[in-house]
Length: 414
Ligand code: A4P
Ligand code: MG
Image (tube, rainbow, N blue to C red; front, top):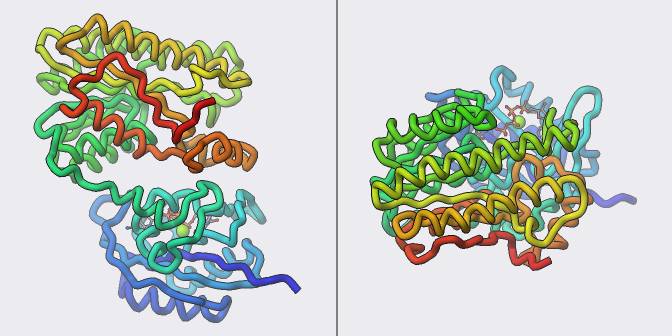
């Protein structure tokens, strides 16, 4: 006899009679599975999607079931269809959305008859509209990939608002800030009162979305696109950004070539080296020199670069060699630049360890296990962990810190 599995379902609605729709969804769930408990229904502001869409009502449910994961997903989709769900726009308004969050301690990334299933739901850990109601009914459930309890994941997202807006009125530029670590840094600087210029390579829409997110923190935010792998673009971007903002107090060189996901993952070693050198090393150097000189003249400024903790210890394989060289170069550059620009300008490098970004989301279970094994604090780092360190380095609290490499890696000492 096989035992039933405990699974968690997210419910969301922002169209029609939301409360009645959630009630009906729970009723329909009871027909398919044993519903053990349901959280309260909470009102949440829409995350992503078209502007102007209505406020959501969100909840979670704990269920016990003998159904296989795909059969459970099928049941959820039938319930959605029955309640008038029309799948039009990704993240768009919906009468009802039922997502499978956790299925026991299983990790699943599979497709059956054209239907995809990823468990844990890939965005669970990024979303308070899921974590708040989930922590209410299952605070100690463990996310099988991240190794953290739901309560810890929730608390990490409830970033405390800084006591004072330590960066009020300052101007900050964060390159590569349309997603991942860069986006988290931009948002965090904005939350501390800095006006932010978002930089992206290609997508105007995502850059605009990241800027809009920053504006919700009550600051001015705009965006610029530029392909920083081109030398000429670096010079143009630095001058245009300076002219647009009038003066820049904080410059974060976060843009880096992604050679791990998408098309680039299949490039040759030489192609990857070329791209990493152009973006991570050359753009960081050219932008820092152009901006650093202006900051020195204005008499103040902070520059932050992004290195990598394992550039110092070494890591096997092509990626170890490629990132070791490019991020090692960035860290070495940081120290010399700090000496060149002192005392007016402070220059430091963040050295992230295993941080959960696009690559981490899709990494195999072998990698997931390795990350937890190699990280004494026993979890993936989050983009917000890096952002909090960036905020401190940019703030007056770090006024005596320059030329340093700050490792944000959960204690890895390999
Ligand atoms: N799929 C893969 N894995 C799963 C899973 N674990 N659970 C596939 C459910 N579905 C999964 O889903 C698209 C496809 O994902 C499905 O065909 C299934 O095979 P969908 O429900 O048709 O489309 P969607 O809802 O637009 O996408 P998704 O991924 O469910 O969106 P999210 O991430 O759930 O975002 N803001 C607030 N405040 N509250 C919300 O509830 N919801 C969303 C939707 C955006 N913003 C929100 C809220
Ligand atoms: Mg969904």
